[in-house]
Image 1: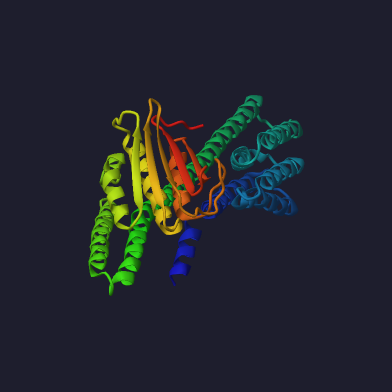
Image 2 (image 1 turned 45 degrees about the vertical axis):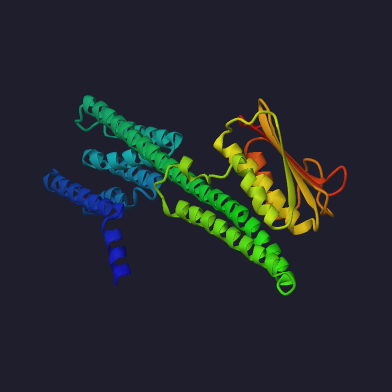
Length: 400
């Protein structure tokens, strides 16, 4: 029922209803005027001529109901019926007002060439009718005036048609802009998801790796070295609490929709490397830190990214290098900061140089962080064995 009601409202509110009413009004008025002409004609018009006249009047007006769908055909029918009226010797002056409608419609709904051709055809038909009815007492000025009225109807139709085309283009442009806005929103959501996935990986993967190693140590020495097992459990507890703190911070970011973007960045930076290395040492990895240059305040994004790269590199050492020692070198320079993590473990298979790295999420995260600042990342076997991760982060973004 609702669907039927919607269709009924659409039909009642459609342009065809207006055009049908317009055609009926034009037919009624023209038929009435022609009937009055027949009644006052002296001598009386033949019956056949009267029937043909009524037929031409209806042929001239009723097709107006389809003027929007078939504008050129309706105009041609109107012109032909008016000329036939003149050929029969009947004055078509009362057919003039209805023909203004198809002239307007052709100008509004057809191209410029087609509408000009339609106007020229109507003007030519008007001239032929004037010649054919030259014996009828019709002022030439009236014909000229009607020709000008036809031109005005055409100009009005062109104006309305241009406005309609402009409105359609504007609506299309608005739809395209809305679609582009939605696409940008979807892209922003996807980028935010990738950022959160990277942050979660950085937070969780390191802590879980430390917990896994300490759990293995605790299980191995639980019976023979209770003190070492207790140390392992303490390290697991501390690492777990740190991971929970980081996770709560990230969840808080997700919940605070109105939080400014700057306050969403996690707090760790290169200044926190000592605590990171202490945590790693609890997992059984001996790490030496060397700082080159004079430490200076760094942009928040660069500071965070450098810290995360060191954290991920040490996590990979714990997971893949086996029994090993590691070294972290942080270099402060005028235009950039560099971090290098090397170990003397058994290494891992990974491409070298600046080309694509392995498909692990950690190395991908490093690559994305470095690329975000226009820096360089090199991963691969170290010169003396083991594995090496070296990153350069410009202090001013270099979008090459």
